[in-house]
View 1 (cartoon, rainbow, N blue to C red):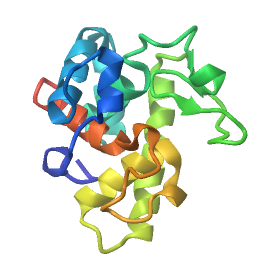
View 2: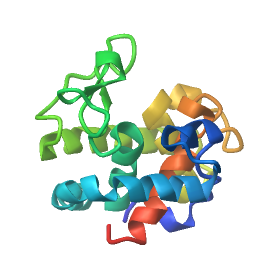
View 3: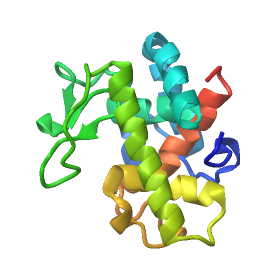
View 4: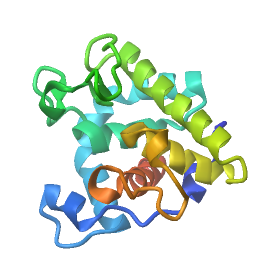
Length: 187
């Protein structure tokens, strides 16, 4: 797709903190893959929408699935579509907090419209990172955009510390590893 090859993005996977969500006794890429696999059954009901949105925006469907897995565990942790103490909406957890992302929720929490909104935000941040770091490869810009999706482009200062300010200190690394699993499993 148009934003780099997700299979070529370097990743260390999930931190121990993130892996603890599933009470895993290990971290890294194997933990990210295990969590993606855990969510795969729930994710399958969104696969058609994910593929449609991915192709519409030139984003790997596997990456959208990975963000859904990380953000909402394919909807499993949401209450009436809401997460993050009512500050985030839908499968991709669009930040509606006026002191955060300040977005207005679009569509039902599991709708194609919601997935479009989340993907538009991701594409926006990939573009911002590309402008901020023009010497980075497209894969590095993709990873930086994923980190910015979580904490904003102002919190991405270098490639070596791309996740320094992200949730769990591993957001882009975990999402990339999950995306690689989804890519290898039909997305």
